[in-house]
Amino acid sequence: MRIGILTKVFTAELVDAAIAKHGRVEQRRRLLPTRLVVYFVLALCLFARESYEEVLGMLTSGIPGSQALARVNRSSLCRARSRLGEDVLETPFREVTGPLATPDTPGHGGAGCGCLLWTAPSSTFPTR
Image (cartoon, rainbow, N blue to C red; front, side, top):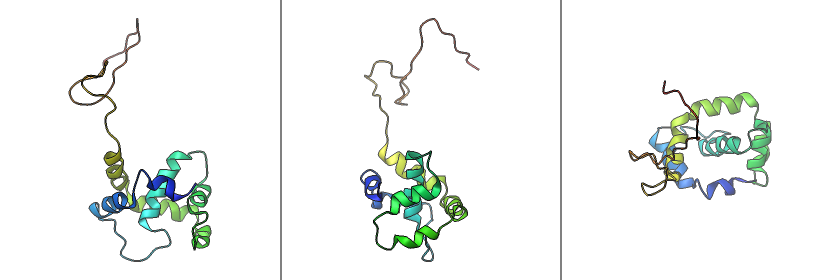
């Protein structure tokens, strides 16, 4: 897998706009650029059973100059994720996702939430 697969859904422009919106634009050149960290975290979601190092290797394999990333250790990846913050990831996610249900969809929860409600026959669910 390469970054190109993720960039079909989460374009570089979309990711860069989220980075800028939340003030995470790099002040200096880093071994782990912010955009790469965004794609790294997205890839972690896809490959939850793989190690950080394996996911980073999958993302960067075949990219010229990526050999330097082989030296990146787990703690550097953790710090990069912390610097990024969840708001940078939430913004592009909300841009590419949306409600699956419409008001005409059977079982639609109403109130504009786009949620599908499901109940099991003869089941009781506590309300609090």
